[in-house]
Image 1: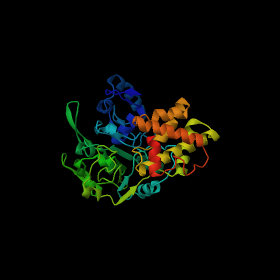
Image 2 (image 1 turned 90 degrees about the vertical axis):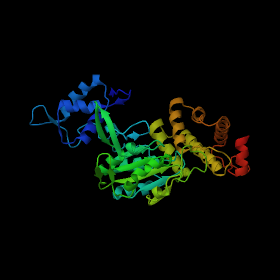
Image 3 (image 1 turned 180 degrees about the vertical axis):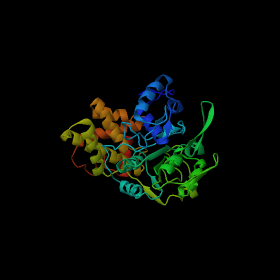
Image 4 (image 1 turned 135 degrees about the vertical axis):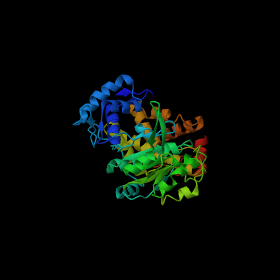
Length: 396
């Protein structure tokens, strides 16, 4: 592994996979390989080591001093990481996205089958996924691609995301201005799945991909080039709102998306949190794979956590409280428990992000549930999710 000039790390496998994808079957010299490495900002002291290893994985060309990059990467790594392209990560060859890894802890639920069917069909059919945070919207797309061995190009949308971030732009490389395709163009060309994450944070600059959402391709006016989508290309977008503003006041930065833009998504699904039974399965599978034996104590802990989260969500829906416990946070609690070995300590550490009153109320609520354990809660108990009573419980 080497450090880039930006202080990041890059494995040789990732470097070789990227240049093989970009220049498959091409004849290259050591000078070319060096140039590719420099474009990725690899530390100059490490480039020679990369070059020596790279030439051993290339086929020799009849022409002296040239090597042929394989048409399919010979890199030991068969799958690369998903590239997260955010506001401070410009579109470069390093932004390539590939087939994500299968998560052994994942359990399919909710709209997973809908997403999987669209991806498997290889038909262009954009889908808009909305729902509160931490309920698995992004993970469903990622794991569908992983299980179907489809390339995923994920773009984290912000208000600053513009045409250059999406379609591509010119970059200064070794004193020369070089054009780099953006993730949208790469996904179109490769027939991949494009994921526009947190789309409701976008400004009107997102309208530059309007024609892409219609499946008609896009004209790159800066380089006078028309790009058509390849077979298999499709688009998913995730959001905490439906693109019509945040009525809850929880998602700062979300705004109104252009109605014409939203109309380009023929399907919209609303992702809720999993049912108690599904969430129990999620936590217990994680426990078994990451913590250890799923004994009676583990079953009680996971059941209590699910009950606890469900009460906060129901109370949130009733307007009794302004925050809730997400599925993502339950997983975070188990990850923390794996380190510290105490459920209560793990809960305290992971709910510190809330204001003091909410944090203390959540901690006290879990203590109450863990005392009750598997006993049925009587209707007069403050844990019952009735708007007035639950509000009183959290305010006390």
